[in-house]
Picture 1 (cartoon, rainbow, N blue to C red):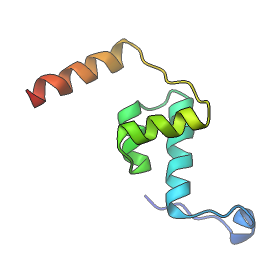
Picture 2 (picture 1 turned 90 degrees about the vertical axis):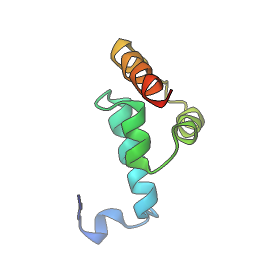
Picture 3 (picture 1 turned 120 degrees about the vertical axis):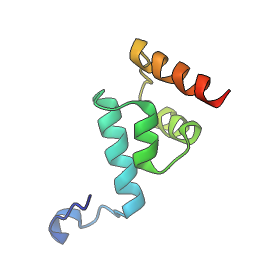
Length: 79
């Protein structure tokens, strides 16, 4: 996916492709629109690194039953 917006909107924001990906991932995760794993993938970060970034920004981790089930499935597949 490519996103384009006028240069003047990004002026002074010091945006890079990396910071933009991370910001998008954090926003979608904070809105509970995507899982931690998917957010880390969008951010192109390991889950542990993404969790550290959330902690730095004081964004709470959400973890519910569907995420637990997804994690258990992944664990079973890697055995």
